[in-house]
Figure 1 (spheres, one colour):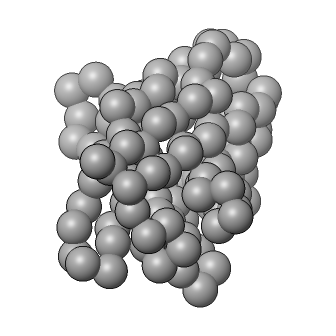
Figure 2 (cartoon, one colour; figure 1 turned 90 degrees about the vertical axis):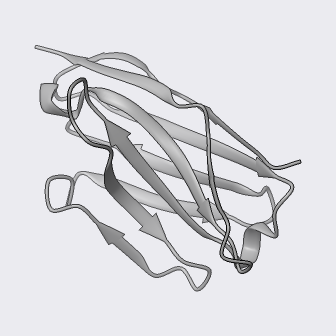
Length: 116
């Protein structure tokens, strides 16, 4: 059974930082592309950042220079360090796994709220 369990969301003031974590089980984590997506009310889910099995990363333009995605294959965990947060970063953040078997899995989501 595949599980992606996010943690680390919460309420923070603008300019603050949060670190999201996603612990994966039931997949070959080291071979999987991992990503973070977010969805704000009334908007489509969008890619925030992704990291492939080789460690190559890509980011949405809106978070470049502020967010950093990383992975720890020994812990089967992917992280999203979010700095200089803005109110427009407010959303539910979802962990995503895309496996070598071409399956896609999602976590349950964690709320991030950035206040003025």
